[in-house]
Image (cartoon, rainbow, N blue to C red):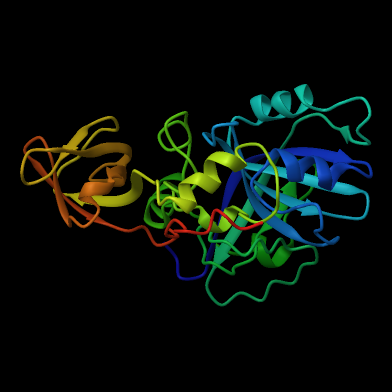
Length: 286
């Protein structure tokens, strides 16, 4: 990877307009959006009523409404789900699904661009790094286009290193935001929203039973491979792999282990760069 370089991630873009846009998105995702000011960009989880993962998104708020930028998960399914719970009385107009690209960069770059997104979470380039949304009809600004671009393999390697969840390995009906290290994508004091009760209980009672970890080994290991600890007890499962490295969900009882087994293959295990520890005892707020 070049020291100064860029990479793009395909995203799904859903435009919402109307006076109730922020209130609507506030109730349908994990982040406190209703009081967000125009120009704000918030990272949020799209979850089921039992807090199971459906997708990850950025909400870019403006005077007329907001752009919902789905960065992981099935954008069409997410739009259909929002449409089902949109009441005629809601002052919200939801546009068609569009394809776009979210660009990030690293190195000493003078970002000469307006409207940069600053979600305040680690999307793969650091916890406070900005990003740029390129709509399908738009070109890149010259300062960004001039940077060398990562290959697909480099983009995936960076995702695994930072621990960014993706479907279907990490985003599915078996995971919640706290297990995936997404505590800073969740507001525990914003009031009622889809999945709020489950997340509050997990935080209050320290109920997270597994966590996402990075792994490396001397041999390739396939997603779905079961892991065990030194005593032969079930320790977790590999969720993503790129050759001899990837991500795995590790059971709570084995989180202190630095080495686990995938059959005869030994894996070294560590916390991903972007993983935020689950909150403990915070779920009773608000």
